[in-house]
Length: 459
Ligand code: GLN
Figure 1 (cartoon, helix red, strand yellow):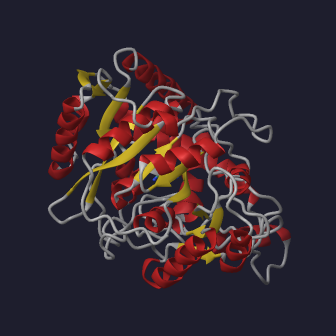
Figure 2 (cartoon, helix red, strand yellow; figure 1 turned 90 degrees about the vertical axis):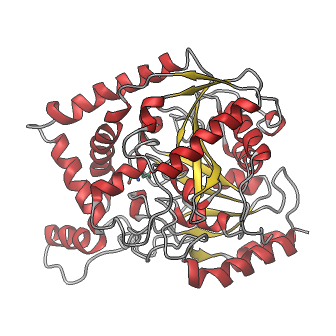
């Protein structure tokens, strides 16, 4: 069984990649060789795709950047190792915005990914390749990464389920750092059940990542069908106003009625400081990125500029030629907010507001079990539509970035289609370690209110 499943997934990946550009590498030989003696373990024979900022031993890991060149990691990320130990088979590495900076996948050094629902549109980002691989039916599940919404937002644009776990739930060992206090590996699936199976395998304490928590990993699968009667769904009505597409608002409002019809109770919650989340996110994320990306100097990894006459020139030229425009913009912003003259005004203040956002969520979760919002203010936009306007692009994450700042988990589940037939996502946020509740509510929701037009799975 595993061999034919893997073959179907590999064939689909190779057939669709010229159109979608979802994969940066496809591991046909290795996957087939491993399939021959796979089949054991909870994910026995499951084909899976991995975002190209997650290390795979001896296999090119680019982060969507020129600066890593042909870098081949010496080790597997913990999540990769756990997936393989559970019998999953990696079919390839997926395209992404350079260093996971972006909301459309247009910042990849290897060209944009196309949305399987409409190839003139973006799949979302930064984990756009993984989202497209799942949405097009190549694989049932894939890993992405989340710093401010990079799994939930593309899940919403591609009509699939995407989970960002609690900070510390999944090891970051082998996840190339963007902004370490925000980064987490996240999971895409065709259904909440697929996400539950993968999360159950990769979650948990890892001694190679001291920020992983020693909190029991729940049996997510067994809780999926729990009735959601009596669950309190918090609705921050004030966030359903300005800047939100009318179609997205309608779909979210209908979904809330849908949840009510399943016995959930809607309660009003107030999140007055959410409006600061994008500003705070772009200070903290760029500050951490400017520090994390200092390691790409032409000495330690892959790419090195040629013909430099002395060391400083080699550093400068390597970074000038190796990084794309968005990465440079963020390094400059991050360096600025950390500089001695501006540290208190920007970075220190952003950290204070971050604490306030955290408190605001804990207060809200005193009144409800989960909070429901749109995942993104719009459906998938056209390729090129926002690429010259970084601020418009940054606003794609207005509903998602605060979960990363607070460290809480969130999930996006498809909740409808626009008039043009594009998927819309409903976001559910929960308190720390409530992945089981989020998956349960998402699963009950998708079972009762499935969306139409999802492409068949190849394997
Ligand atoms: N779109 C956001 C950014 O550009 C989030 C990225 C992410 O979650 N990795 O930073």
